[in-house]
Length: 461
Image (cartoon, rainbow, N blue to C red; front, side, top):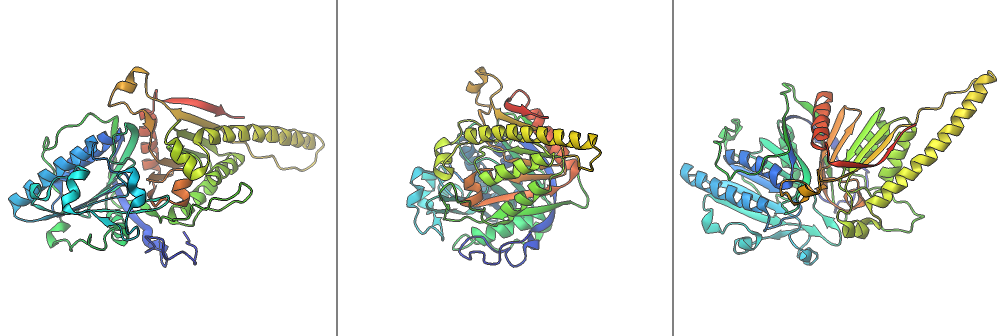
């Protein structure tokens, strides 16, 4: 990976500029959970009861009226009781970007806002006197007009990490969460320190006994949540799986321009890696994304189809339409129709090329056989049935961010295939290089989507 030399120093975090290889590491994925946001967070939080010294919780949107917020509050109470019983203090850092439409009035945007303990109750968090075993800091950062801090992750004792696709919200959406340990946790911690862990949010060094592996939490300590759609245990890889952390610093300038002017995406590890992996795809590209509004992504997929790569996309209809219009000037449904129409043109061009090839072959003229045209499948997420929409455990939209290339490389994280994620928002992704893991996670997603997809296009030649 290469970052542009004139990288804007104001953009944060930028700790990887001089040596992007520091983002390359290994990991041991432990499980992959699929369900609603409440379900996948509840599953992760139950394990967070193992916390011995510190817990870092980072999300984009924080809703105080959500079930996830209630679960976090309950977890904080339990951890405080545990810390008091063991006569030590557990450090907790809660970081988010937005909790209301008034975020555009956010003060001191680059330094962030430290939420005074007196205001925690307004966020649905416990009062300080209720969690005396914890030293908790609550911080938020938002840079107007569109630079939302979109990453979502949980880091426990710098030894175990979760990367969910969901926010702390009331939305019943189809989400996923990867649980992992290994060297990747150090890289996630470095990302947190570089951006969040400053100006009052710093963490003290971990004690020596933190080198021990986390213990097993006793069951039933948190209020049981509803069953997840699926939870897949990942087999152990003794040497770890080659992994790259993919941060993408925020940028305040959305670079809106006339239609005839094309801006390339800001050069970040996240955007650079995705562009490279789309170009390098040999057989298949699978993308599941809430929105699909970024034209360079669409062009990259078109080029992949021309090379004979099969492209499979799952997205959502009527999801955050106003946000799409504000940040991209277009919506997913229009881009899907545009890609479907583009495929029709590719088929016509392919047919003409084949006829030329056949005529040249009959004449004995040396000519190269044109490459096959890849197939294109685009489906919209839908609940399993009309009745299930009223079921609080049935996701109504898809919010999972999942990319699988050639059944070899898997990318998870916060980044969407929309203009906001590629141009203005801060993002954090993670790429795993393992065929076994790619196939296992792809099968989990496929099974979870059974009966939950309506295809708009299933095209091939």
